[in-house]
Amino acid sequence: MLLTPHSQAAAPIRRRRTAAALLASAVSVCLVAASAPAVPLGVGDRLFPYLGNPGYDVASYDLSFTYPGGNSQPLRAVTTIDAWTTADLDRVNLDFAHGTVQSVEVDGDPAEFHTAGEDLVITPENPVSDGKWMRITVRHTSDPVPAKGREGGWVRTADGLAMANQADAAHLVFPCNDHPSDKAMFTIRVTAPDGHTAVANGLPAGTETSRGTTTWTYRTQHPMATELAQVSIGRSTVLHRTGPHGLPVRDVVPTEHRKALEPWLEKTPGQITWMENKVGRYPFETYGLLMADASIGFELETQTLSLFERDLFTDRAHPSWYVESIMVHELAHQWFGNSVSPRTWSDLWLNEGHATWYEALYAEERGGKPMRDRMKAAYGASDRWRAAGGPPAAPKAPDPGRKTDIFRPNVYDGAALVLYALRQEIGRPAFDRLERALVERHRDGTAATEDFVRLAAEISGRDLGGFFQGWLYGEKTPPMPGHPDWKPDAAAKSPDAAAAGPREAGRAGEGAPR
Image 1: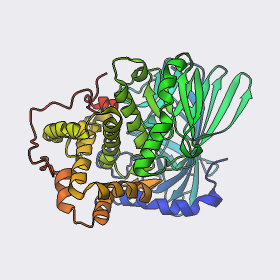
Image 2 (image 1 turned 30 degrees about the vertical axis):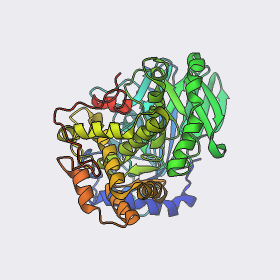
Image 3 (image 1 turned 90 degrees about the vertical axis):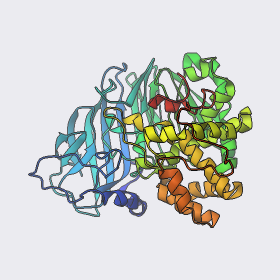
Image 4 (image 1 turned 120 degrees about the vertical axis):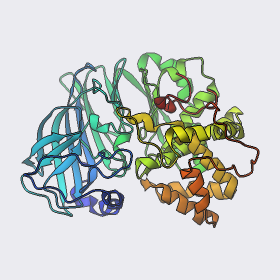
């Protein structure tokens, strides 16, 4: 049964419709007649024009994957979507671009379907009117072999699969409304041959064994953006421990590397306590690390189960404070980026700037690496970062075929530099109150840059419009409050590897070394 049945979800979905409505104003929601050609749609995101779809708000996903035992073969899959319509729909567009669709049903009746760009365009037997519940069931394959010219989706590990769906890749795995403004509840079922273990976002909801296979079921207790979905299938061991307030902490590790990884994993409960002391209680039902035996070049904050490369922890080239600060970066995302998701991808700086901020603060407090030194180095490079990637809140669009190009230094250390300047401007007490207020006010929802600017003015009691205009949108970096001696240097290099920020930034070619 879906986690969000029709009889119980109407009220919360009506509240969540606002995020989709804000974006839908940028596109036409008046959908074409069934006789017209199928066309790809989008919700008007400046960086990804065809991402997401207007006309409905997803309440829940029910995903079922059957893993054949090899990570180069397509998985059989069924995706069921419960959604609340926000317009009269003759057609329904879903994002889906890397699999074969066998059949589609809308409210139990067979429906026609076509592809257009990276959209699956569905024509229901009967149009669906505004303000109605709609259930879509798609039977399809999910291909773990990378799509030509595309990044993300399934990650093939040494012993199975994991997911890396940020920023525009969940629809390479399953049909969905692939935009962070439309968060939903998830139920995920994975069937795999004996000898494999499957883990997904949320908490376990039972297992069933039959004829040499086991089916694991997981359910989220909080809404989640599609880009944060995670499924691990492999010859893994699941380790359990307890975090603050009795929080279940579970880690997924390659069985053969369990002993080497355990000393790192036991640090997680203390890191959660450290973050709670900064911004308030951990926002989800569980947390843990998924150690992928793969070389992917980055770490990823998938909700409740962050994805890490195993060699980050087993490569002795990395000092311990550095590894721990990266762990905190992904942990901080559970508040900033996951619980509070970006309303559009231009708001990415709110995710990465905050995660980089707490990563650097942890390195200062636990590793003796002064925040001031890192921010001064970032200030020196900031003008160059803005020229290459745009100002933090108006990043340049990704290059063709390189969707992850939005993850440039301007939204990592460049955005953390904005937070440092803000703390200098309004003072530490007001800044700390602002951080707590942001995650409390927008918990389980979305936030835009404008929300943060407005909240900062409310908390500080000051008009900060001019300050934010320069720091978030200026082509050049404004003077740093309290540090008149800091000067941008057009020839400056990124901060060195010991202070450059998370290996996440490796997706854009900068940041910590491989």
